[in-house]
Length: 75
Image (cartoon, rainbow, N blue to C red; front, side, top):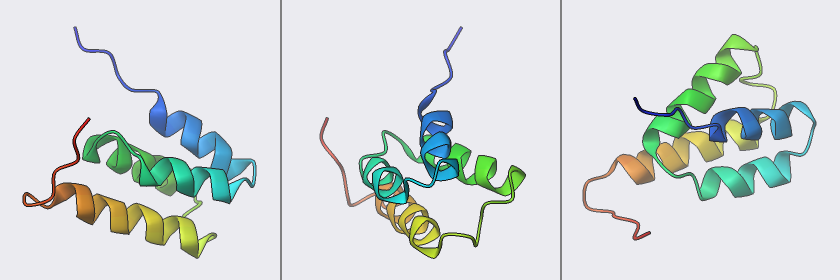
């Protein structure tokens, strides 16, 4: 049985707490695209999208960067 990542919940707590600089730093080193999509879904559920444009931009940029097949981040 696969364990779900707690990363999205922790970053969401940073955003909700108002610490957007730390949240953006964590978004930039996101483990997988799946985690970024989970964060985006959680932000939609909590109606936080659009409130911080820099956080939304960081999620979009890093989702695109990690989704690109020619770009590979080594562990």
